Length: 399
Image (tube, rainbow, N blue to C red):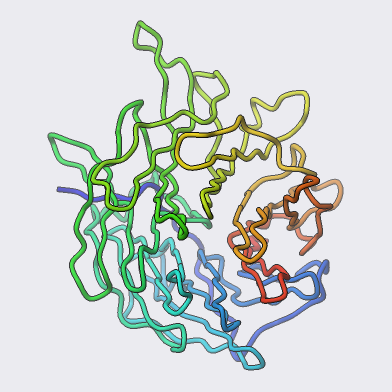
């Protein structure tokens, strides 16, 4: 049996972490180096100088946690865990031994209480997990969740800066989307377990419409888990009628997923929305979408969101406010303190202003966006919040 995960990565040039600390520049300044950055409206802070995927979370105590990798060669790399306490320095710690993969997609989550970090690593030879208390500055050696094909030379692999295949299920439990391929079947399930224990597959996710899961999220208030992805509708002769976005959900304690529900489509047999983001809180669900450039309409909008309540009540896609055809890389999340939806995206405009922008959705619509950086070729990866409601963004600069 072969296990795969929905998206993977391609080889990138080797990079290295900044030695001895961090580099900071005022917000809006053109950052002078590529790598992973932490941004507020006041400052942009360079965390690494590597182009390898990285991700950031912020716990309730104000500690920030970054997981990334450093490529030692085209075929090997090592994992680095970077932490910061309020008023302290950034601490860099290597995690485990050298990994037999030149590029590793990474994913990071906090448990619902914000007291534990889950770090996942998607390698050509499998999915690996490390987990520890947020009080620690290091992570234990990653354990195997599901074995991969081991095909590290697969040309279809490409870099993904915003992986979302895993979801915390409790204080120590986590679920991971795993695709299992045999000669007789091709199924995807949410495998669940704890660090240090064996993971087991749950009920298979519906596979009709050639459904391909892309994102998973959990509503911590209801316990409901959502999976969103892409699939097809067909004509009577078996040809593809439209590429669509579908969602399925599973209630706590239920043994099956709900039937696939179409929530978006462009009526085109070759092109459909890209799924960019998924977030859920207190029975409100939001899916972030990107319209293909070849199918832009006369409004010029490229970034959309679909709002749902529960697992059955969904609205039609709406444009994200203050965006246009030059915007990409949409991220969405809900601030649990205010229950407002927040959006961050990248504007790629070589003739004018480029960079990272942020807005939030209130009762009167989308707030005027704010710039968090002015730099072409950036990818937003994370949205986090301080206690005062101020936003912290993580983004990758590929320049």
